[in-house]
Image (cartoon, rainbow, N blue to C red; front, side):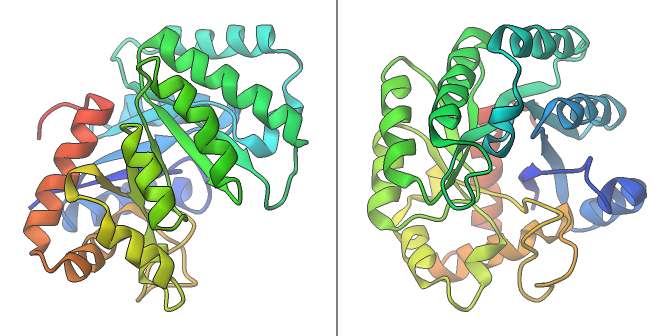
Length: 263
């Protein structure tokens, strides 16, 4: 039984301060690969550095919608991300992201978020990699944009999925994956649990989004990749499957989407 944490932020504190211990605990919980995700240029650079250090770690690079307004120009951003990519001799960059739309806090104006989102999707097509999508309180707008790019062959995942069954159906119809975090274990997450029941197992990924959103029984504490098994356990319960079945299928899904090496 093996798990893949498809979305973590290993560069963030407190994880990065004790990363050998974090990775040891992940291995003890059968988490054998981790995708660490960039949210700005420094974290994207650090994500690649960590992926180069740890054979079981892979990464995505990009700018979170919160920071979209901090991009001086897209020509500048392209130069910076391509410079990071040129350092990737071991081919550890497996996706672009996280990018998307966040209308909950709107740290960046919506119009700027849309521009940055589309720019990242174009980059993912150019690089030939999938996209890791952040969608918070912007389901309809996010999916409208993604539908255009899915029609052009773009693949990807809605990370930390927070939509309902109808949102999941639209994600699935465009060929994208749904990634489930520890939120599915929260007491008030009935809408998400129903969406998970609806989503076929061969289209699900599991993630921690660590150090955030620790699942029950660790809710309120620092999350880490080793806790992704609790997400898998809840999916198994919801779908009346064994934990082994969920582990096998979600691991295969992550490997297919991100072109990860076989375990």
